[in-house]
Image 1: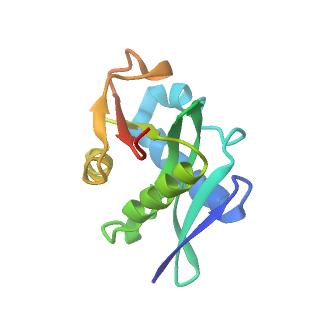
Image 2: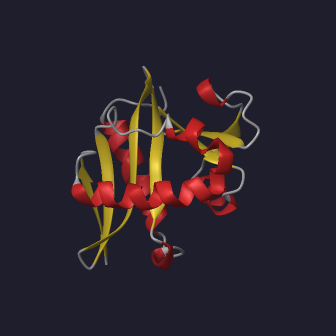
Length: 152
């Protein structure tokens, strides 16, 4: 059984998981890793979800405010041996619910074009590709996506 726990970015399990995520992303991003890493710090993240299977931390995700009505999904990761079990989709759903409770109407995110499985996950969760926003404008390796989580 998977349990989704809402917490903060200082949570030790979240910290452990994002160290693994950063290691994974450094391989994917290659020479561009320093650019992307600058936008993935957790100091401004106060809404974190950690997924546990039988008490073991196996995945995480977070969101932070991007604009008045828009939350940005960040730091999504599931341990490789737990992928394909719907855990990431559960994390996304928990983050969206929490973002809605916090007053947001839209969620946005950025991922790499190299992460086809992530793109499929987000599309399956109702996200659509949008023009790259903010710091990702003009970044050819980035895909930005959006989902309306609550009608205004």
